[in-house]
Image (cartoon, one colour):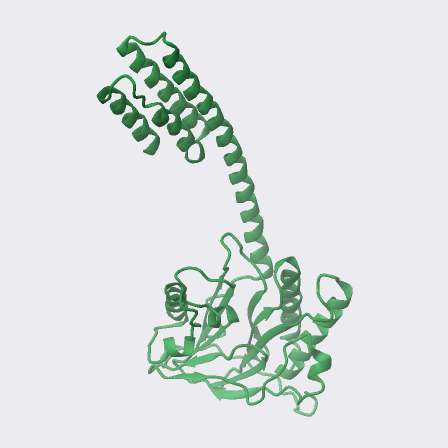
Length: 366
C-alpha cells in the first residue's frame, strides 16, 4: 500500500499548500518504492498513476503549460523509467537467488539428508541451522544408520568453511555410511573415517592434508540392551537427558584428537569407546560447537547443560525445538557459526521397539 499512500500524500500536500510548494517528491518516490516490491506491470502502473496525478493537479490549477509543471512531469516520468529498470534487475536477481536456493536444497538433501523419524524403534530428530541467511550446508554433519550392530550415529564438524568443508563432509558421511554396516566396533569405524580423510586429502587440494581435521562423536545403541557407546574424537560432549529432568554430560575418560590427525593420534592412547546406560525415556543430544560457542550481547557462551538441566521434554523433536528457540533468544538471532543438532530418544515403557539380531563377532577378531 505504500506507493498508493505516497501518491495520496502528494495529492493532499499539493491541494493544501500554496502554489510555491509541490508534492513532486512523493510522486517520484512512489514508483521507486514499487520497483522492488511489485511486478513490472505493477511498477509501470504506479508510474502512470503518479504521472497522471501530476497532470491532473496542474490541470486543476490551470498551470499545465508552465515550465514548472512540465519539469515536474518530466522528473516523475524519468524516475518511473528508472524504477522499471530497477524492477527488471531485482526480478532477475530474485530468479537467480531462487535457482541457487533450489540447487542448495538439492545439494543438502544429497549430502546431508534428514534421517527418518523412527529408526529401529528409536525416535530421531535432526536440525541444521546455518548462521548465514540462505546458506544451507557447511562444515557440520550428522548421520544415523540402522546396522547389524545396532543404531550407529555420527555428529561432526569439519575445520574450515566453504566448498572445501562441504567436500570433507561428503567424504566423512560417505565413509560412515559404508563402514557403519561392516566395522564391528566404533574404534574400527573411526579408523575407517581416518583413512578416508587421509586418502581424499592427498587426492584433492581443497581437502587440506596437513592442517585439515574433523571433530566427531561416533555412537552406537545396540539392540536388545539399554546401553549407549560413544567414541569422542575432540568434539563437544553429548548430553543424556533423563525422563525425570536429570542430565548427564557424557565426557570421555581420555580426550582424543580429531579425525584427520592420525599421525599425532598414534602417539597417544588408542581409541576406546565409553559406555553408559541408556534406559527407556532418555534422550541423547549431540551437537556441534556452533551451539556451545553461541554468545549473547555480553559475550557469554551458551551452556546447553545448564539450560536443559531439570527440564522435561516429551521427545527429541521437543528438545530441539526448545533448544533452537533458546539459542535464538540467547544470541538475539545473531549466530556466528553453523549448528547441527541430533537427538535420539528411547521410547518409554509400553512403546514397542524393533529388535535386530547382532552377529557374534569375537572381540579378538574385532
